[in-house]
Image (cartoon, rainbow, N blue to C red; front, side):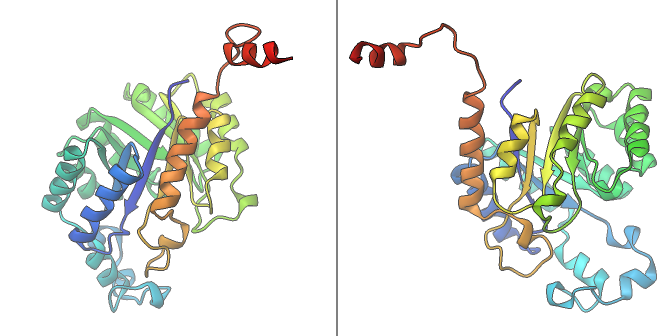
Length: 283
């Protein structure tokens, strides 16, 4: 098993502010030492009906606009800004990625040719968008399986096999909620996905929305090769995702602990290790 890779998902936690986004990239790359920094890209008028666009945010205290559509537009960064985000990531030696929520966003982000593109759970049955990426984007495609039935999982993996892209597909065990209670995390879903799909996809990961970092350590012991966690500078900031995000020291400890635990995944290469010989001689 290779070293698990860790995604710090900024998503929209930058609050629509490129200066905050740059600080978050720098912090995640240098202080936290994450492998990948991920954002989100939406086209609100393509995603929302007129009624949805013009309705109030369901949680007004988290809204950045007078309507849900205005809220989403406020948080959205354009493709030129995403080019800059990618350049900032590359300057710091960290991988840029992005979740795409609709066809226009998929085309825009694919044009940047990042190493990987993420499909969130809410969009994993948008087969027209998946087909576009299969046919026009050569990188890895990562898909979360939150709120997805077993039959739907099979349809998705079979779809990628049909387009000869299953070798570029990474699937994630996920429970969709913000935050998720520990008894709803269901880590054994990682084991089920490995038993069902391990020989049919590139890798299997874990996307968590829980609190703390102990669960992520357990996830890698079950074989998760990618760990994705939301990242924020301040969990008290206004917005839906902040409460389920890790602050900088939490993300730093997550990366540190996963890499240290990974080092323990071995058998003794001989019956008494050198470090033990020293103790044995004392007895």
